[in-house]
Length: 345
Image 1 (spheres, one colour):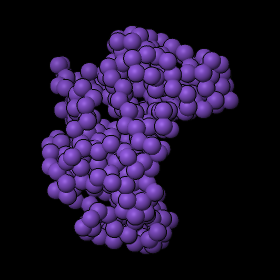
Image 2 (cartoon, one colour):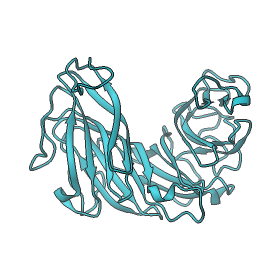
Image 3 (tube, one colour):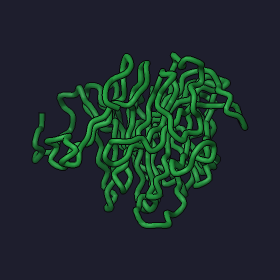
Image 4 (cartoon, helix red, strand yellow):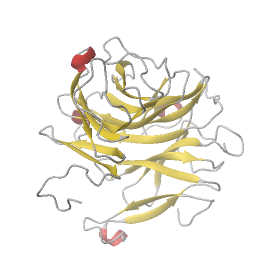
């Protein structure tokens, strides 16, 4: 991991607490990760021991693999459309502890389904298990996938489950989270429910009977999923209006309530419509879901967030008090700000 080997490599950087150095003497590092073709890092997570887990997309035939359940690309010589990958680095950034290609295969086999695959979101529990979502090739196009891996194992046993949600259109998972009770350094780690959001263009995206919304409203909608510790789906819903939506990030609090953010081009959401109105052609949104409830009751709150320009939210976190923190981008000169903010325009 000393120099770039292809037309583009993943980089992994660890900064010291002051953000002033990557020096190993101060606990930092900077490393390349990749093979002889183009590789892209798209998401990262860290466990309690400081080990980094990276996911993304590779077109390399020789992406570094160690202990993985898929040891070669889906296409001989490297898939030009891309394969996903998951790599675990040690806390010093000096060694790969686990690395695997990640792509969809036919049920019961490791025979690949042709097409593009990529990891776009990753989370880690206190036991070092990695949870990944993104997009994967399917028999009908592009599906959402959710994978759980145990990097402490090798080969086939290291893949604990691989679930795809497959409609007839293009579907992508962007954000993933696990129960806060699972993110602990003390053993044993309790079983983890998994939460995923993304974007669907499928009129037949599979939903559960307790869904807030059971049909596609525009060309694309956001979706929200909850899976049990075995990968079975407990809650699955569309979320959108007559315009386009995407769920870009997700978080969950200690009570199991789900917080989702992204963007909407719709003037209203839901039937009857949830409160609020879009201030521009595209607003960010924030919604809280309670998957233990059904239908309209499963949306605890919803708000548009933006001004008269285009606004999109890309990240969300929640604290112990249930306060949501959202980050994104805006072209709105009148994006709502508070008077005491450090920058109000």
